[in-house]
Length: 440
Image (cartoon, rainbow, N blue to C red; front, top):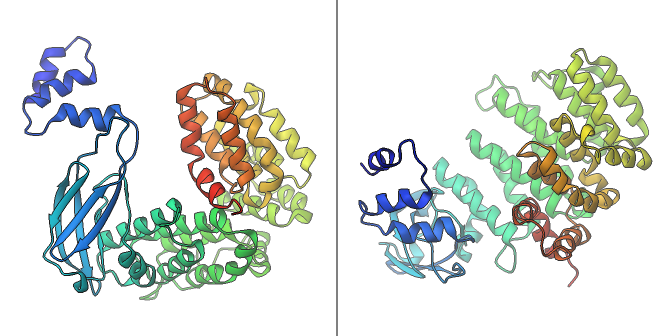
């Protein structure tokens, strides 16, 4: 009825958000004006601690808005023992502290999630007991949604760091265990995304080479499995494992296997590869085998039959050159708006220009990329500035790269707020990892 009143009152007229809230607030038991002020008009993200006591879960919001207000929201609390949810309840948290009756003793659970179905918004910090259990036993959690929420909670603990996080190598081992058992497609895709992020963003080059053999082996196990067996992967699952392997392949054995697949244009143990798959494989091999780069790229270009893909491939190839001078020329060409079309091709080129294996040599492109942002906002698609930034930061993890971003904003106190927000959003993980990587 509130929406009907709103539509009737403002039909063929102008209205703002507050007009809608004023009407709905009169019909709600909840103070919607206060809710709107906190959730819509103030910046920030809730950060929530919790502590399990006998028969009680104490929840505390450790972060408030600038006006010292707290976010009110519903959450789903789940308590788990022996892989099964033994208690769950939907509860409202409001104010700095909330106490929720939970008929469970501390010794009677393995872990609990204050945001057990990802209904809530914010950073829900895991307690130490739950964190330790999940790192070792997350694969034993039976419910798909609960297990998915637990994966996200562990990942958040990793990227938040600052004393309450977990080590990248320990989480990587947990992800490998998940690869071995996860059957739910969304959870599997989430694990593969997290695996790639941890591998490239959180591990040092030395750690990558240490862990690459076991990570690759876990992926090859599923790629080499038959799809027509009871315990084998589906074709979609095999495709997901293969694409993840292509992105992180680091050992000589895996690179050679992939090169053979590309050279012979063969399928992957029953998984057919499309023309676009061979394009991606050629890109990745060109970076990993710089001495063969020209041959690989020229051969792949000659193989392509689709004219649009030929043009796209020829555009991206310039960012893959083993010659630094040629890569410089490619980047310099993007300073002209006429060369930033099609935008998807540009983003492909930028992502390979800033590939993690070339992060050191591509750091010098970060500052001029930021300096172009205001022009890009004017000349590009509405989503292009953020995507330009995502591609620019995609391969970087060093303190030096993080410092370039921080210094750029510090030197420009009057920089447009909307673009500043885009930079901070795109660089969020870089800034977190870069600061964590600073020598102590």
